[in-house]
Length: 122
Image (cartoon, rainbow, N blue to C red; front, side, top):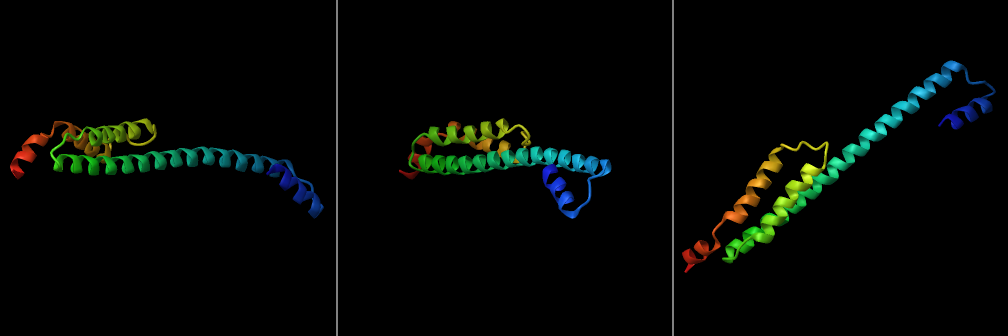
């Protein structure tokens, strides 16, 4: 960025003053700080998306397994992995409503009694 500014100053026939160089350094510092926060925000969005997809798949698999009268261990594991991934994100709010709901759904998937559901249908 500094090279481009110096080249533009040479083409216009003017020299860069010390004040211009100081302002350019401030702009570069601000851009580098902003790049770090944008990267952190991208990581949060990625982990939140992964949590949502794993939570949805885990809920569907648990619902199907329990509806057939089987244990919902795979769905429960996927739900708990979704909670772990969201906690792993770092900047992501680790005590959020999505974590609590996925954790409750994972616990319920392991605790649910599939044989009782199968006996009710019979």
